Length: 417
Image (cartoon, rainbow, N blue to C red; front, side, top):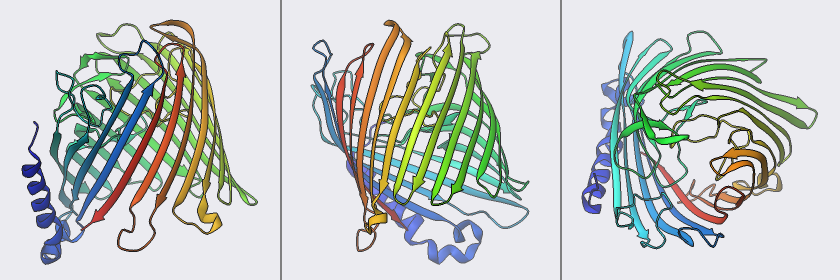
């Protein structure tokens, strides 16, 4: 549903006043309101992608939009079983676009090629807690290794379903859930789930279960997960995270291994792939160096839910994650935190990733590379404390897809009530 700006603005303002400014008066009613939080994120987003192929459908994609994301999270009612409620309301407004340059995924695009003037959606999730076990059902933002919601544009992607998180045993997390529908980052509607490998083939649901255990003074994490995108694929995942102080340095390792195969009716055909990665890091002072190595083996690409983020992979970058069938890739990355020089809030990053031997619809032995840079600053004090400005640039060259240069400018201002 496309809402008018006035209607949505009034709704956001009313919800903010009702849920946020009135909370102190109700806090004495119990834990439901006493522990409640209301946050509003204002995000201004400029996106420019300049295609370098003469045969590209468009020479450029360029749009500018303003987003509003309001989140309310209640506490729990007192007693052995506590009940609560989470809510999210989102609204995006077009500031600049045209039919010739639409398609940045900041905004929905109509059949005539023009971006919508505005769009929005809202959702609720009921929650229940017993001891250290929590159940949520409704509109959710899953962020587990096998399903990470995408928040890379104006508004976040959301899923509809349920999740269970139990932490009854110290340092052990047991999780399970099921999702039935998804709303993409540039959509107002819910739709069936599908896979990145075949977005047009629908699945009835995504099911998962996993366990993570932390030990060694919280420096080491091991995890084991399994998921099923019904009648499309099954996926198992095993990972190890570790941080090790060595003198003035902190060495890190992020190791993961995926096993993918078809499920049930195999609606997109047989699937067979193994994906392993190692993302190694070394940090001292304000400096952090990374080396990433990744390999996809088998006849299929790495499997994931359509629209979701690939942040779990070691070589995930701004525009890709080097996850085609048979692809070998590596990356080098350097981050610097200027707090080490007395400028807290200022961060810089540069990285380069290279992939080869990729098998795609265009054929085999495909090659690609991506170079990313980013500079960001977050205000540390004053009236606009926590306002952040990020500018990032990416250059992508692929033998099997369009080449492009990309620039994004994102201004975010979080408010809490």
